[in-house]
Length: 76
Image (cartoon, rainbow, N blue to C red):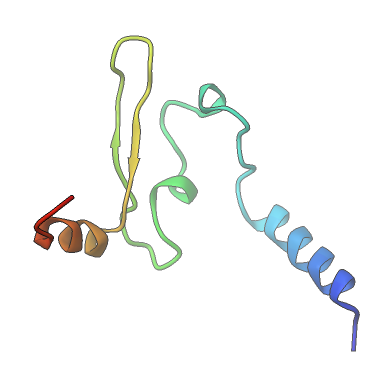
């Protein structure tokens, strides 16, 4: 059985090969985000809003079911 360190390195390497690299700053994001950033692993929409407000770029992420849950709560 491989060590925990070996398993961790293998998983990280596989992740780097299959996923888009994570940007360090929001300014490094392309204006049209790739699907890796916009959908869940099940293919559901996850990016709810991506726009410009002056010099800032707000991004709102949430799964649909989480938004339904939030709207059903009395206090939020």
